[in-house]
Length: 138
Image 1 (cartoon, rainbow, N blue to C red):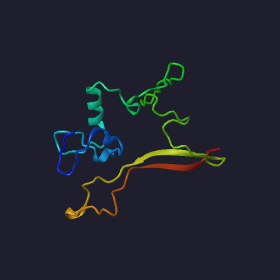
Image 2: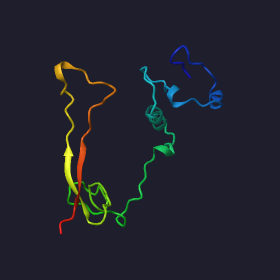
Image 3: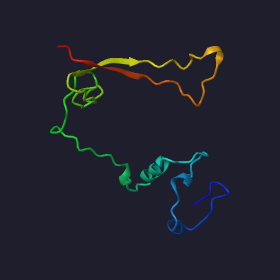
Image 4: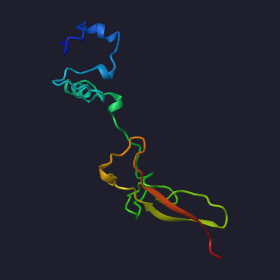
């Protein structure tokens, strides 16, 4: 094994198996100074050397035509399978209904007065859904 920096130790190959290194410290002898925290360089080297693929890298699916959901007409292509559709699920009291009034858009990021910087302690507002609990008309 060739040391990439002076702080790495040169150890015999079988001594490296006694103490596995964490992914954060494993640089995979790459040509740059980045650390391979997601393990893609190591997986690519493993595949290039003809070694087996790690079981964690194999993606499987149990989808079939039997358990498939039809595409919904709202354009989400079956993304939302909740019974009420793409709306918040509420259980109002008897005699009331939920009226979905849409979204309240958040203020834009550049809406600060006189070049004032946004405070890191008070992040900008996020969009919120507006709903109303209304009595059912009789």
